[in-house]
Length: 126
Image (tube, rainbow, N blue to C red; front, top):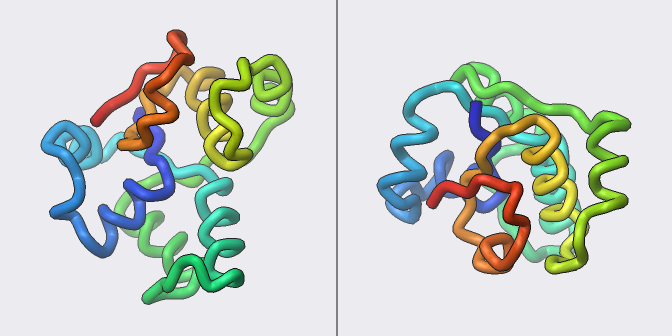
């Protein structure tokens, strides 16, 4: 199972040419999930005008489900790991995705250079 970062999810749905070969390969295997955090992040950015979505959040979640992509909820264990996560990265959405990936033992599909700077216990795919 791999966890898909928010930008990688958007690109996978709407602009797959932006994905690396390794990201495409990981997502194409079909053993993927997105976090409810990504849906939350997209909602907030769309409300602020920082992101224009072609579909509603509910439709995006439905498309993911139809493609066999699971939606990962936030658990108390994820919150506990977030609490002890080093502060290499300040973005709260990305920090929760990092905590979730570490707790679940899932590689994180991301191009985010800030995630690459630290978090040695996190496997990253790009």
